[in-house]
Amino acid sequence: MLEVSNNKDAQTTLALFCKVVDNYGDIGICWRLARQLAHEHGIAVNLWVDDLISFKRICPEVHTDQAEQDVAGIKVTHWRDQNGVFTLNDIANIVIEFFGCDVPPAYIATMAQCTPRPLWFNLEGLSAEEWVEGCHRLPSPHPQYSLIKYFFFPGFTDKTGGLIKEAQLSEQRQQFQSNSQAIVQFLSRLGVTAAEQETLKVSLFCYPHAPVNDLFEAWKNSPVAITCLVPEGVASDAITHFLGQTAVAGSHATQGALTVRVLPFIPQSDYDRLLWACDLNFVRGEDSFVRAQWANKPFVWHIYPQDENLHHVKLKAFLNRYTAKTDALDNLSLAWNTASDPQGNWADVWQTLLTELPQITLLSTEWEQEMLKNGNFSTNLLQFATTLA
Ligand code: TRH
Image (tube, rainbow, N blue to C red; front, side):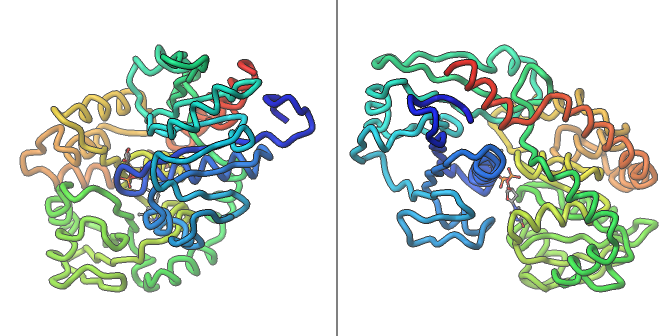
């Protein structure tokens, strides 16, 4: 047990504050971390989240009308505003704010009255850029109180916090991937037909501005049949255009070598299985991007867009580090993020990548082993916390 309270027998408590800026990545990461801290480290976790509707999309057990609820052994508090009155008993031993999301002022003021002081971390976004190593674990003293907040960065090297990965994940993935019946049952449950399951299966999760139409044109002329599985709500305009009807779960159409099938938006654990079941995954943001790396399948990342194309710098920083790739994967990744112009050569880029998919799949296993050498994000965080306690 992490000893950060006066009472050595007490269970360590942790408050994780999450504001959903947009989409599902903020709550997706926090929910994953909350579960791991509770289930693997025996910590009493209180997840504060401002948007229960987004949370419910990835975790259907969530009730959107409850101020407090228990979900999978984690206390979930609907974080409605910055007000609130807190006593010393309300304050957790460890406080994590996701992405500088501003813990309520009264909570911070009460933290400052605790003995010992809670350990306070700001959980930062994932980037492969060099500067991350220099900022990881940096202290930031509070201007008013005797409190220090530490920046903690996920990352791809041993000078960062590493990546979030559950202890049993590789084993679960291997069991699933080696059980063809389990894969058939899973895909059938999502409505994927037996014939579609025989084709090259590609999952598609991207932002609306991705050049989906260009890729679909290349796929229509692909030498192998492709089934593109796209959760409802993703790239809806492009999917509707292809289908010739509104893109709702269950709708599908075939043009040339390409079948596009719209899936329901699935719970987070099923999304992992989808990545494991497909031959190639298009992922985005941060959490699905990391999960694709644990799927041991080739993937193409659609990075979250930033002003002045800053995201292109981040994309290239990752591609420079990433070893499970070929030139064709680099080319498609850059074109997919409009960081390069394939000048009408989408078909060439695709066909080269297609022949290299088996090689990239093998390299993905090596990448996973490399990343595991950096340790696990939650364990690294708790080890760092122990040094501060
Ligand atoms: O949804 P994202 O684009 O999220 C984020 C946010 O935009 C955030 O503000 C930004 O900081 C970050 O990207 C970079 O992509 P992400 O991170 O991949 O999160 C998606 C989550 O949704 C992930 O936990 C997987 C989950 N998911 C499901 O549970 N079911 C599904 O069907 C799909 C497609 C995803």
